[in-house]
Length: 113
Length: 116
Image (cartoon, rainbow over all chains, first blue to last red; front, side, top):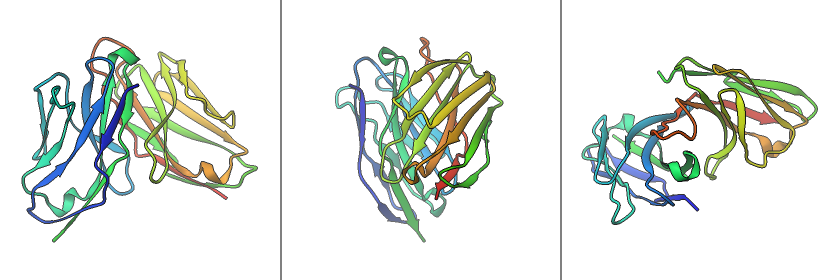
């Protein structure tokens, strides 16, 4: 069945460091891929998405490229800020399974000044 | 701003209480969802409603009872809960469910439920 695997945290970085959070997926069809972010005490917010192979989603300095050959959608940011501290969730939606969402377990990021 | 609101934000209840969680979406979407988020576990999809009809119920205990009176509102009625039901309950909506297009889900802030 469909699933998402993302790197376990927690991840702690200094401000302005480079961030990578790995995400790989398994899907029956050709899924759409998403990154959601959850700030403390809040719900999930859509950060970025990509709907087909080689698409790059980007928002707020974050980027992720849909890599069909490696079934990956790694999240990157060149220079993190303290305000990026949150939990990041990778997810997929597969039309072959009725567009049900499958989420990873989340990766907690803490950025220290 | 997500366009999906949830009330209350926090709820403490005893095992014999009956309470309800409310979700409202202001996005004109046709599908709404309830998820349970527990510590150290992936999000668990509980219920899916599409055009006010329940389309999925992922083996959720009967002490959780959803209600969708219209496409903008979704309730989760709770009764005789157990302490292990303590979690963050998230509501989400999407334009459609199971359609041909990309089905981005938009989440509310959640209700933090504690069962004593």
